[in-house]
Image 1 (cartoon, one colour):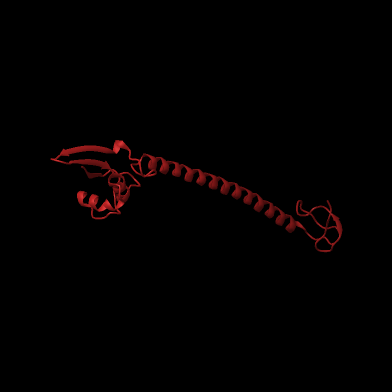
Image 2 (tube, one colour):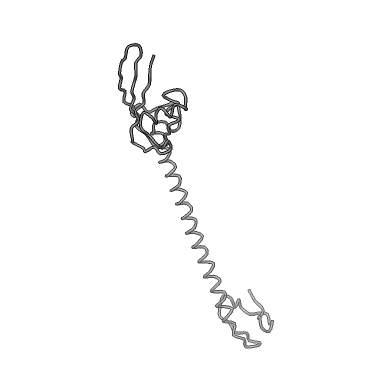
Length: 160
């Protein structure tokens, strides 16, 4: 491919951005254009490398987020009340009973899991979320929003 001299405009020059050249008409040294062309190629290579690195970073972060979600979801499924609010993992319960004259009081030890809260626990055991205050009183809980996983709650249920 032939190019025109950028100084005098003579045509028939080799591509001066790819090989060092001198214009035979005006004796202009066109090496500066060659160096600019080489710099542009280096920038293009660098951009391709950076794009590849960005793509690798993006894919690895996506995989990391997906793995974290899978771990979080598996912990949620293993917790006592997270997910389906009507199911309790029976491994977290220990039944203690005490009989009285006409009624029976059942005490249940429940192990708190990540994602549990007093309202859902009260709804499960008492049928009404508003009984969370009774759980707070029975377990001397001052802050209803600060439950610690693996702590044990004592749930008192009266069966008539």
